Image (cartoon, rainbow, N blue to C red; front, side):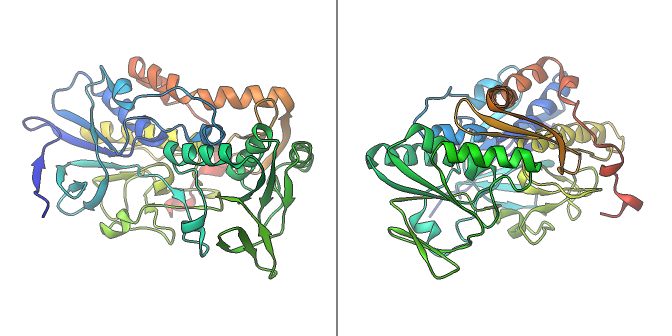
Length: 404
């Protein structure tokens, strides 16, 4: 039987802020909060994650093709901020008792919680996906796939899901492994959400890379050696990569937090849980409503939500009312291998504008975007206010009548 013991997150009577998850949103919240409270002795910030290495989710398609990336350390980033890092798997949250259990052995107490446990590939959506498909849930998963692709020597790789993750993975695999046949399967045509000309460029680039596109195809099952489709057919596959949607951790629902149909924490306009005011939810883990509807999980929205949660906590600690969170989308960058890409500039509601980039210019733009989070965190350590600038989206992000 596991031995339980209590672990505090700070000394004395300090207000204990616990950040669960060291992804893009969680780190933004932790660094911003630690920087804004650096001179205070009555606030203790603790970050919890299962890995010390920061997962660059925006580069996992590169890791999956054997490309070496820099190892970014979360504890190293937090050095000098006063924030503490605790490595462990979050196994449960007791929102009423304000405790978090790690690895079923340790228990952390908090006064304020920032819930930032992001999403993973929804392998439960289709029978056989969990058993027979690879995912890009993290660095280790991507490295396992890279090793498998290196051993193939030939054959067919089927990528299920033609959203940005699936498109980038299919393009990267086709470019790095020309000896493999790559098939991209999805219900819609890849690039359907882009401006028609940008979408046409994207599909042309996939064709030039030799990716076989099977749009309008619904996957209903995965078995060894094949992907089964709704029309009764099948696609032969030596390797299957599942990129067909995401799901969030069930921990929030089990904790009694109010969640939506997808298990995301429902927040008010300040990013507080509507059921537990001492809990803030950010990034993929949160159901954040704007005037145009619910936000979807991306780095461009996740980091601002983390920063806003930190600013809201600071305001609350000062006895002030947190302000509403507003965010408008501004681009959708998609890489198509190392030297090609599409960048679709968008309206705040994420609908496409007429402006877009393609080719090498888009690839360079995407690389700048992908590389930007880490130096942004570094700047926030020295200048916290530098992290508080993002597109608010104007009228399209306002929630009419305050109804959420």
